[in-house]
Amino acid sequence: MPWSPWGPDTSTTGPARERYGRRQMTNVPVAPPPADDEGRDLAVLAARIADDKKATDVIVFDVGEVLGIVGWFVVAGASNPRLVRTVVDAIEVGVKDSVGRSPVRTEGVREQQWTLIDYGDVVVHVFLDEIRAFYEIERLYGDRPRIPWANPP
Image 1 (cartoon, rainbow, N blue to C red):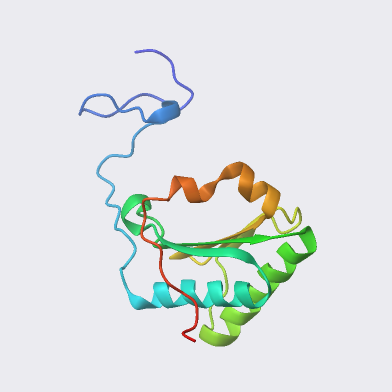
Image 2: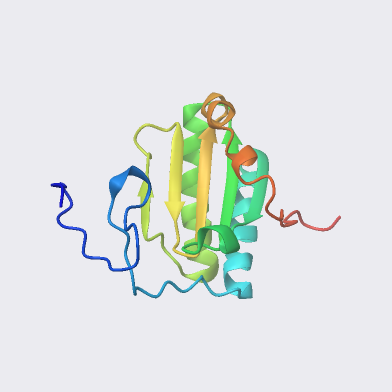
């Protein structure tokens, strides 16, 4: 058996290597996030808060069927780094005040270019416009349903 930095291949059901050579986890149940209204409502709330703070092109995607570990993505743009920070702070405070939830973690706050706010079932991405154009995250999830979030007129 060839040496691997991830240890011996202990699977018995064919190749156990995923992409990039990591061992495949077998017999580990992975439950999709619940298709409940709570996650959807949180995503819509985050989108509305981002829009109120002048975020651009706010989109809510239902990604639960393709990702399995998260149900909803909120994607928003901001024209400058200060606005990225303002939108992120407003979402964290608004969600905490409205539904009493704090993020599980946040990433990229210091850099203020692509900030990720992880609520478990909902992940909010706030991009600097140039970074968003570079990564084109909408293209990756373009086949997923978009959720209407704007307040009715």
